[in-house]
Every structure is written in C-alpha cells, then in structure tokens.
Amino acid sequence: MTNGFLETWHQSAVTTAGLFWMAFWAFGLGYLISSMIQVFVTRERMKQSMGETGAKSVGLGAFFGFISSSCSFAALSTTRALFTKGAGLIPSLAFLLASTNLVVELGIVIAVFLGWQFVVGEYAGGVLLILLMWLLVRLTFPKKLVEKARETAREQESGEDDSDIPDWKTLIRSAEGWRKVANRYVMEWGMVWKDVTVGFTVAGIIAAFVPKSFFQALFVGSGQGQDPAFWQILVHTLIGPVAAFFTFIGSMGNIPLAAVLFGNGVSFAGIMAFIFSDLVVFPVLRIQAKYYGWKMALYILGVFLAILIATALVLHYGFAALGLLPDSASAQSVTDRDFFSVDYTMFLNIAFAAVSAVFLLWKWRTAGFGALTGGQWSERILFVLALAAFGWLGLGLLVPPLIG
Image 1 (cartoon, one colour):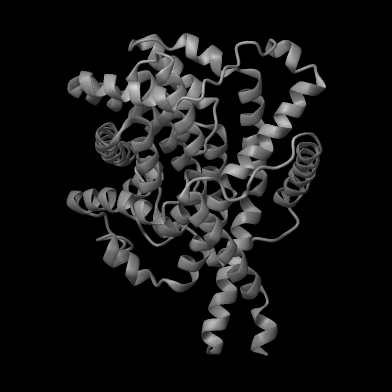
Image 2: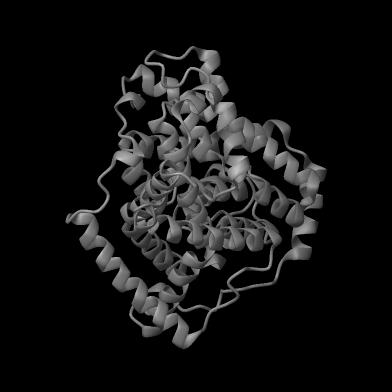
C-alpha cells in the first residue's frame, strides 16, 4: 500500500471517530429522553387510544410515535402490536412514520451534523409524510388485503401486555422505574450500535476516499454553483432512496452520511429523501413481509416511496420560496472539521459516558445482556460488518506509525 492510501485511510478513520465524538452526547440525550417516555407511557395506553381512522386516532398515533423509539426495527414491532390490537392501518402507519421521523434524538443528531434547516425539514416533513400517507391510503385502501394482513400479524403477535404496570407517578419515584429506564437505555443502544458503527464508518470512508466528481455524476447537477433544474431535483429525490436502500443503515446511522452528501453538493431535496428512506430499505421490507405478508409489505413500500418523494420536493421548493434553502456550497467539508477540542461537546460527552456506564452496569447486574448478534440474518450480517468496521478503524488510527 502506498503512503497516499495509508494517509487517506488514516483520515477516514479519524473522520469516523470525530463524527461519533460530535454525536455521542446527542445519542445519549435522545435515548435517555426516549427511554424515560417509553417506561412511563405504556404501550397498552397507546393501544386503547388508537381505534379506527379519524383525526384523533391519527393524531394520537403520530404523538405516540413522537415519544417513542427512533430505531426502525423497534418501531416496526410496536406498529405490529398496535395493528393487531385493533388500531386502524392509517393510525398504525402514522405511528411508524412519526417514530422514525419525529423523535427527539433524531432532531438533535441532525442539528449537530446538518443545521437547523434540516431539523425544521425533518419535523415539518414528518408531519407532511403522515398527512400524505393518510390521503394516499384513503384513496387506495385495500380492505381485503388489510384484513388478511391483520390476521397474519396476529399470528406473529407474542401476546405481550403491560396493562398491569403501575401509574407513571409511582414509577418515576421508584428505583424499579429507573431500573427500567436503565434497561431501556441500554436496549436502545443495543438495537442501534451496529447500524451506528457501520454508518459512521461508511461516512468516513466516503468522505475521505470518494471524489466530489462521483457525487456530481450520481446526483446530476450537484455542486455546480447554480440552481438545479426541476428534473435534476427530481432525480436527486429518486437517487436518495436508492442510496439508502444499498447502505441499509438505520435512520441514526444515516445522518453523518447525509452530511457527507450535503458537503458534496447534493440538493436539500435529495438529502431529505435520503433521510426519509429508512423505512424503504430491504431489511425493513423483509420484516414487514414477515409480519403482514409480501403483498401488504409491497403496498406499504409503494405508499412510503410515493410520499417521501413528494414530501422532499414540497420541502425543497417551499424552503426555496421562503428563502430558507440551505446552501451546500457553504457547508464545511466533513474531513476538514476540527472534531476534538475543549468545548461543550467534550463536557457533554463525559457526562453521558458516565450515565451510560452507570446504566450499563445496572443492566448487567440486574438483567444481564442478550445475544449480541440478534436472531435475524440481517442483524448477523450487520454484526459482522460492525466487527469489520472496528478492525478498519483500529488499524486506520494506527497508520501514522506505519507510514514513518
């Protein structure tokens, strides 16, 4: 290997480490808030509030999604539970969309890497996704397919019930309540650590190794210092989901890669379409098929693709009309950032490292840890990729001594 390759490898590893250093406290804060809400607001309470389609049930579905987990796979499981207990298809999908687009921790991480316009776009877009989904499903509602999907989902339901859990006021004052928060916090990290590891590593590799010309060829019209034509923006919104499909990284792990894309001139619409695409990747499609059957899974996939493309376009031109469109030309290159310095990030990271260590120890002493790899083949593949990523990063950080 030439010195040039080794230097770029080292830059890639440092970029990955720096990106995670920037985001660690945001993950910790988001998962702490999410864990508290999930413990103190029970799933049974959600189920009782979400009947057939109506403004109230759709609104409650979106609200419960907002206060739920951002992990796509956890959201899929909870959505199935709501659907099998009688929630309508539209409120259930509203919950799914909100739990992966409107959650607190995702907004925090987006703010760290991309800026306030993308945070506004994420939340405004999340609401628009739900409204467009409601309209599209109402227009195309496949009654027999939904009934069959509910039967299939009920066959998969574990029968979990939390109706006998104490009131939140009792839980929040008890050690048991906070033990549950600690367990949930560790479980949240357990569900996403593989996605985050692979996602941040891929972002570092792309930032260091992939030339800007590649992005200009893939996302036609990007980085050229002029306003792209409508057809070019449309292409960006189509390429975004394709790029997400092949990375198959969760919504949190995709954010640093989105920052890399934005730094290389990809349009606001393309970035938002990429971020919104965490529910149209193959592992999610496969799980949906397992829960509801392939026909229903493909129907949901088609609905989500249509609404995310429409939402990305509306956001892009809406922000442009208001003069709020972020300028990718002013975006700082990811590899040029000064990641490690004595600032608020360092102190927040220290604080959440301490919180994480306490919760991790508490979880280990009271409940132990489950299998690291998970039961699904996609989780096993991600586990292997995460281990490979750790090897790549470890060797990459040690490259300078090898150079000379």
